[in-house]
Image 1 (cartoon, rainbow, N blue to C red):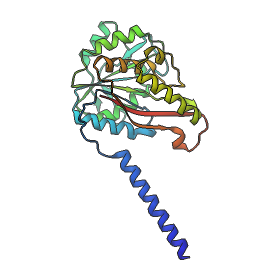
Image 2 (tube, one colour):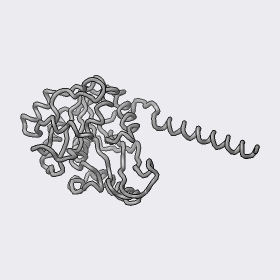
Image 3 (spheres, rainbow, N blue to C red):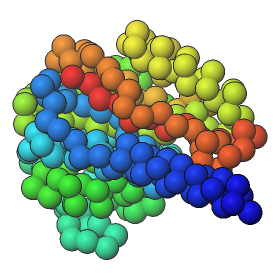
Image 4 (cartoon, rainbow, N blue to C red):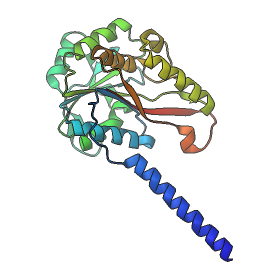
Length: 264
């Protein structure tokens, strides 16, 4: 009985220690980076919200005045390939997140995006992140932009060139994107490697040819990469990478992959 007791006690100590280490890794307090973050990639699935929270806490240390938040138009709604939200955003349970109304108006006036607030009501790539913005970047204005799958390289280049007029030290560019979808875990890992490799090469044509097996918004990623390249902020660092198979403990399809990435 004594051996069983001590074996159980050691097991419990190891279990608690593992939990504490994991908790510390997931929720550790960030420190101000020596090289300011220019942009990043976050998921839009609440099961991995620690990625979003950690990155937004990092950004909060920089005190940005403006964040551009890109994401997919998941349901391909509306008449515009590129749609921007106009007005302040009411979060699900908190207050409102302010937007940069003047810049939104200028995007529309130049024909770079259209306005259709109704389609944002069910767009979780934006909505799932707004609570985090309210909590961790309460003084920061946000410009939410969503993209259909059929955006052309020329349209994205025109948009990125105009947004670049605002991307100074006080502005951040974030993309809310989930990576490989519907694959088994081994297939997903292979596809994620392909996707990251093309991103590191800034292969815009190749990325625009991707589908949901790679990620859910090629246009969002390409626009972010264009801005990073234009600003010479092309250093890319992966903070976290996980697949839903690791969360549900099953490698069978369907799975989804999640990254948090920064550019500096």
